[in-house]
Image (cartoon, rainbow, N blue to C red; front, side, top):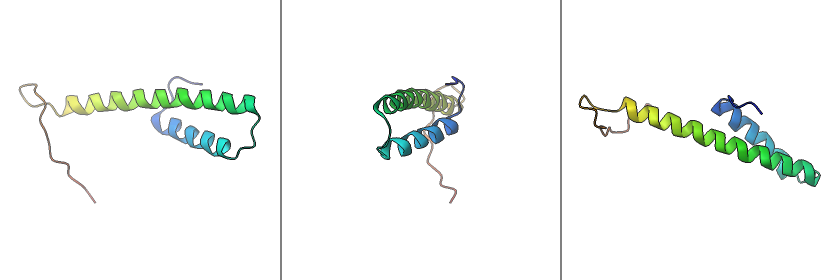
Amino acid sequence: MEQSKTFEASVQRLEEIVRRMEGGELPLEEALSLFEEGTALVKSANALLDAAELTVVKLKKGADGAPEEMEFESHE
């Protein structure tokens, strides 16, 4: 598995894994392999989300470097 997968690619692959495992037709060895791949993808996706959150926090810092709370603005 590539270490540089994007968040979206990781989520897409996770969805594929879940669909295959929910089918219940996989041999045990293949199911375990997919489960292992899925847990690695979740870990990677969480790391990407954590990094994105840190970027957002940095972008929201005020002039004095302290974080500023902002109202959530929905653009719907």
